[in-house]
Length: 464
Image (cartoon, rainbow, N blue to C red; front, side):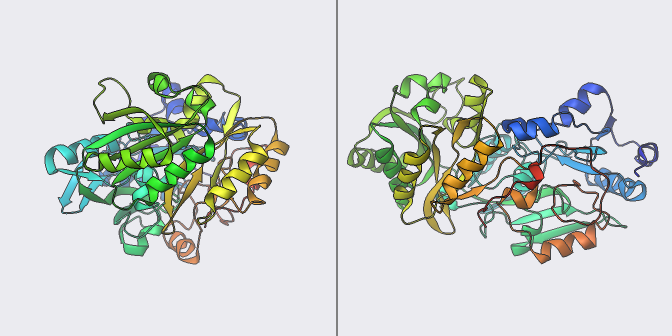
């Protein structure tokens, strides 16, 4: 049993909030993308929000938690979709947003505080150092760097650089642990996987070292196609064009593109569109590829050329789903990974099997070194039986599903929890106080709030 009063007494002057509005705001992320998680997690709330100003404050929080058995749930911008930042056992939310700013820049590398907003980081890198991040989420405007690493898996740039778990995409992590004697651990190389995409179950991320590249002038483009197959073939061809520097090729169903407000005029009714971002230096090559694939260019501009409009990537990845949910709260989504090689054939078979029920959307990526597509299909929610049926329809075609309707790290399917990560937690969080309830099978930890609906029992093949 945790001791809230004792925990507060031990914090000293570390800032805290316990008013109802702050607790409500900081105890929520984008879990409501899922109707299952909406039902199960919607009433959850922390008992306290703690706001460390620096690493000294973080250690004070961890020492207080260890002494009072206080559950801790780390939080960045709260942009995760799977309940990663939801406090399943109450306790304290640790808002790391004050740990911001660039700590060091060297050629090809930046170190920044976990609370740094990703768009602000990219802007500063470009302005002061002529560099930019290789990878970032579609939520870069509000997401923090630490939250992206703890809860994300890929994003803008994955078409060129692969997923966050690929070697070289996260160079270093500075992590604070919650053992009997809290400490700060610096992870490099393969060791970063112990805290990468671990929802904060293996420690609080304090700072991140990410790879950078020379800043590029990017062009945003929308290409319309008469049908799904031609749109998908173009997106995959762009992904495979090694001479073209690119950040995005998002293949979007006509009904989803109809929700794209400011760029709606560039998304012709009834036609599949592909949202692209390529280097200005590769503009002619992009135009030639569009022509070869039979597309029609409906938008072609330099990024930032339309003041006041969101960047084009804010219509891709999870944002595609968000724009649709804003129009119709009855929809939800799945996440799939198509095998490389016969990607088009499997996508066409899936379209034939589910196209009357699902609005398909694909992000062209590199996965395990090969060009393929990550699917983010959207559909009107009926019930669990429908969800199970649609999952089976994918898996019968060899298309793997990472389940976005569960808060469990393993069941989400984007990360394999191996013995090295389990041993890391045994050493550094033996009581299971870090984001309790998120790591399946962990034997210790505080009691969870009563949760119904069985999201923790959902199983899928995963991507690992």
